Length: 119
Image (cartoon, rainbow, N blue to C red):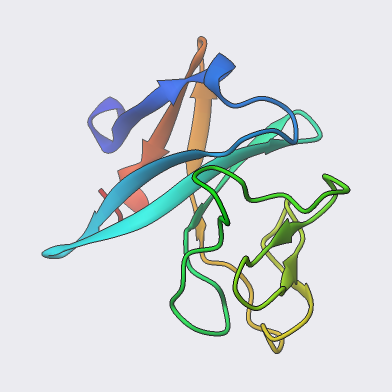
């Protein structure tokens, strides 16, 4: 099981409704942009891709939350997503949510669970 975990960052680098932590994942031969955020005390990770078109969400590196700090927002289309699930809440995402990645917070670090198909 430990071999399926890849260290992403220290847990204290991802603060509640603050800047997200950008990283990359591999899917076959492709490198994909991804990010971590913390919301209501829990860390969540998603591919950094709007549900509407494959554009990165953050308007500045790591800026994924809207001004209210309640929603994730696409910088290009204004689509809103639920931080805890990636579910489309409105805008041009047309019901298509963010693609979640399995992560675990263990002993002060955050790990990607590569067993889910992303490395």
